[in-house]
Image (cartoon, rainbow, N blue to C red; front, top):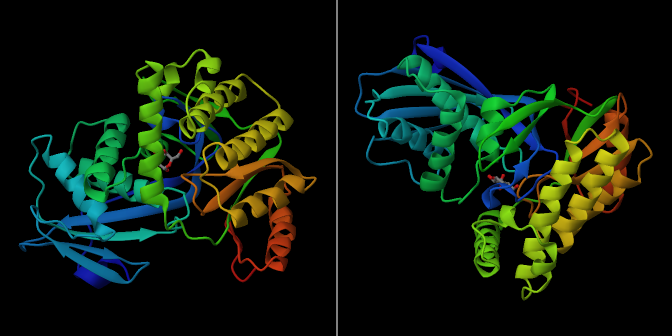
Length: 358
Ligand code: GLA
């Protein structure tokens, strides 16, 4: 149902933002490291209009559900907490946000590691920027969105997802230094196409496992006497750490090196090799993969039209990404998903968006 159907009038403003898929640089952003995401075609659209009630109303068209909350009292454990967090983030700038009717519509897959929450936050903040004529740029939007996620949704995340949703596009990859926020839009490796598959395994441990990994990285950095693992310049020092800190730190150090290598103008085959190495490192050293996801990645890596594949996002289930030869992604998906089904798992194609009824 549209804004008009729910609220009986047209919205004052409408804004959109995309989900993202990360190609390399996983679990590096909260270590001040490097990342390489790109936007996916799926987007979240947020429409809003001031109302004359006491409560904010958020209607999510795809979930056919509504949440109500007050400025000082959030909606609890609900998708609308991200919207509430963004409103509070704008108010923290000293701006009064009027009570609003809000309509959310999205085709970004939820809960698979493609940043549906960042897309919701960035679209909400873009709509608020337009409605209230705020002088804030896209980086500031990403920073407010990240704070909303940490403070109101309880995931101690880095800034990659929000920067990607706010600044990336689907034609290039965003090379971002998460410490300085310096960034460059780079071309995709020539004659390639991305494929994103959902493993069908839900990411139930994601929040607790994520926060635990982050704490381990901070401890490793302290023991190594550096501000963040990004600053490790002697990989041998990492080998002296006790396990599991040694393997956690080794992942971060080698992953940062892989991103820097990839942006050094490598060809598709080398880019793919770096993705394969990244998956192995996430599986063995960082331990954020699960067996069915490993199987799906292995099937992708074995396909002759795939340069490389890896899990993407926080891990613990969710999606994986493959770099394919141009024009082959949907064919690769069919073959690989059939193999995955033969093993008793139900995966699905997310990017390119599968055709209706296919
Ligand atoms: C989640 C977080 C990001 C990043 C990735 C892992 O998506 O929100 O900040 O840490 O996991 O690379």
